[in-house]
Image (cartoon, rainbow, N blue to C red):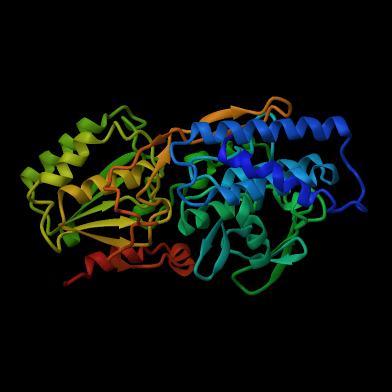
Length: 426
C-alpha cells in the first residue's frame, strides 16, 4: 500500500469522535464524494512526484489527510477547498491547487501587496484605489496583519521562507481565503486597516475582481511580479523578458534577465540578445557587469544556453570583484537553475541583494490531478529540474552582500542593491 495511505486511514479512527456535538454541514453523500477525492489525491500525488517527501516525511502528509477527512462533515465547501489547498502546499513551490481554476473561481481584491522589512504595504492598485499606494496594512478583518499572515501561511505553496514572502501577500488579497479562514466576516468585507504615509488610518473594503479583471490592469507575471515604474532603472522594464543598458557615469553594463523565455515581446530571440551583449563587450570594456535576476520567476530551462555560455566564458564579465548578480525572493525556478549552472562554470561573481525564492533542489513541470467529484485540479511536480550536485542542499542561494529592499527605498525610487554594487571597493 502507498505510504500516505498506509497510515492515513488508520488515523481516521482517532479523529472519528472529534466534533460530535458540532453541527453537521455536509450530507453523507457529500462526505463520501469528498472522501473519494482525498483518496484519489493521496494515491496519485505519490505516484506523480519524483521525490514527494523531499521536505516533509510521509507522516506529515498522512496527518494532513486524516485531519481533513475527519473534519469533512463539519466544514463548508469553502473550508474543505482550503484544506485541499493546505495539503497541496506541503509538496513544493511548483505544486498546489490553483485558486482561479473553474472548479473554484476565487477572486482578488484590486490591490498588490508586498512584504517589506517594515511590514506589509500596498505597492499597486487598480485605478479606483491608487490613493492607497504607499499605505501600510496594519490589520485585516478583525485581526492584526501578523496574525492574518500566520493563518494564511499553511496555504502558500513554496520552496522556502523567501518564496513564502512573495506568496503571502498574494493570498492576502483573496476574499475566499480571508473569509474561509475566519479573518474577515464576509467575502466582500476584508476590512483592510491602512496606515497612510501621513499616519492617518482608514478602513478599506474594495470591490472584488475576477482573475481576468485583475490581470487586465496588472498583467505582469501572473499578478505577482512588479509592474514597470519610472524609478529606479531596475524597475523600468520589468515587463520585458531581457534587456540591457550601459550606465555611462559608472561604466557599468547592466543586464536584466526577467524570464527564461525564448524571445522578448518585440520578437528578439535570446540568442540574438546574447549576441548583441557580446558585441557590446567586444567594443567596450566596462568597469563592472551587473546581471539582475531579482525578477526572474522562471520559465523554460531549455532557452537560456547561449546566454549562460556568454556569462560563463566572456573574459570581460568574469573578473573577480567586477561581476555582480542581483538576486531576491522573485528569483525562482528556472532563474535559480540558471544560477546553479553558472556557479558550476565560474566563481567570479558576487551575489547582492536578498536570498532567492527557490532552493537549489527544484521540482517542477507540474501536472494536474483532477479530483473525480469536485473537479478540482491539484498540480503536482513531475520532474527534478535540479542542475546541482546531490550534496547541495541549500534552501536558498544567499547573497554575498546582503541588501534588503525596504519600503522607504521602494517608494523613494531607490535601488540600494545597485547602489551597493556601484560603491563596491572590495
